[in-house]
Image (cartoon, rainbow, N blue to C red):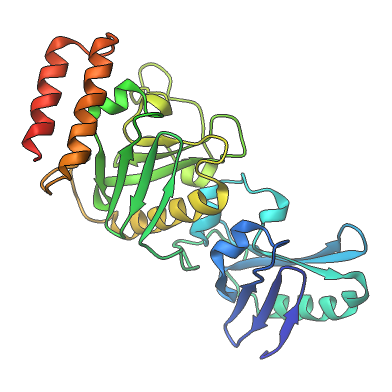
Length: 305
């Protein structure tokens, strides 16, 4: 098509096989859009196109993606608010005729498989390396490993006892992302073989007795980081979750073990080790760790020097 359609917060540039969505970076633009910057959406990844009245004298052109085509929406699992939907282009009402033209043009480009779920991700995920600060730890992803490093002031004693964690992507089966805009939001990594399809259907209840073992609450699970006010916001944690999910899908054909690997090997800053030992002593004095746990963890920390 070769045309450009500029709307509020975004501009759509139409190519022969895809539409490039460039998001504005102004103060009124949703922070998720600013984080994404731009996204190329193949026409083959779309199922339909709609044009509806918007708020306050606007119309909304929306490209509807096929289920399973976009790792960002797969990770969001229906939790994105309307204002954060990257497939909506809001236009002034006086441009409705132009919007109708582009809607018809897009519909004409949809393929025969538009009504079917996508068999693979067709939209590129945000690129690693990535990191964000959750309430109880700092999450990092370098494209091959996900790491959680716990904060003394936020992490539960269960996570602190487990130690900082690293998870090879090849050992993961999926992710659960519960929006930080909801109550008790979190990002959880699922091991291979976990009976959960939360990347497709959204976070659900833990399995019933007799099925897959019940997972720990996110604040007690070393494979999860929890969000809080100002910690792990949507524009940071969702692109992170999408990037991890896309990498997991690419490596799922490789048979591997499922156990998380504790951080180790590299030498730590002595000042950091000393701070951890001091905190360990505080937990021991408060009765949160036993004598045996205190001795074992202190020896482990000293061995990292």
